[in-house]
Length: 279
Image (tube, rainbow, N blue to C red; front, side, top):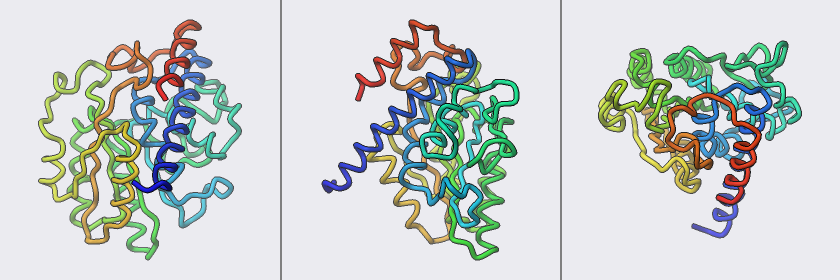
């Protein structure tokens, strides 16, 4: 890794910790929200918004921008944090999560929040939206790329696999699906709720290019996403990112009860200290 790349990766690591802090503070302020799956996706979302995607916070509706869809919409604290830190709206607004009349509702609503490309929340639908956007780019001769982040529990949904087949049929090499494989969903371990076997093998069987990474290793995340941008051979890319639910906070890590719920005063203090100590 060159010196420049090391500096980039370290800068993104630090930025991801800022994203994690913002997640915790906003869920604490709302006394409601989803910390676990937001923290597991923080490194991936940071890499996308602060390095990979071609976007302009001053012009959220720029026609040629790259698109991002948070298919697991309940993890919106990670997306709101990235958008605020990237400059789409004031950071102070993060304190209004889930409040009446707030632009930051409990699931992403593109009619309200600047910078959102899709309204999500009903699991399993995000990849279909991504297929439509990517196909629209192809038909319109546009160069933008589409990124869809979904949970591993979400891959239980049949619509995910219908969209996966469709993306291959239409040779959507401008589409990247990222699976936040943290091993837990609302009701327990993903393998206990609905065993899916090897996700990598499933995506390959559908005809996708597949990359498996550590979803908390920023160098691997950036490398996989950079490589996906270079592919133009008619196949979409699936990135299977092994992550830890609640990453960075010891009492939240791999604990299904932290799928949702807000920290207490003491728990927030512990979490913030651990996040920055972990750098």
